[in-house]
Amino acid sequence: MTDLNNQSIEKLLLQLSEELRTLNLWQEKSPNMCLLASQAPFCCDTLSFEQWLQFVFIPRLNAMIEAKQTLPTNIALCPMAEESFKHLGAKVKTLINIIADIDQLLSGQRQQTLFLQKNMANNG
Image 1 (cartoon, helix red, strand yellow):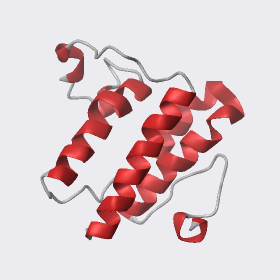
Image 2 (cartoon, one colour):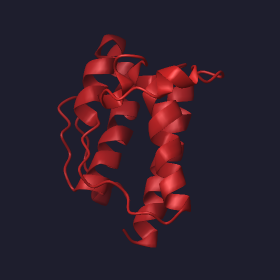
Image 3 (cartoon, helix red, strand yellow):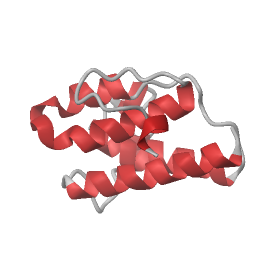
């Protein structure tokens, strides 16, 4: 990815962190390391999806950017996000859109069904 794309991902990761905080889905204390070591997709057997975003996904992508590693391109977080947060209703609209923006920037695909919004290219 280009430096511009990395900057865009960094900005989206910051927005994701801020939105998780806004929705009170951010936790101050990290889960036990054993819980973080799950081999299941999204650590779904040991963490909530918001915990996985906070303690696995965001730090991992930030570390990859810092190390100038190639970021994943086969990614689809939005379907899991929509399922995980559907009980919260419309208040997660911004969160779902940020996650869909991350998917689109990394994979070139937007698998969003809830709260559809124009893609990033049209958002400025």
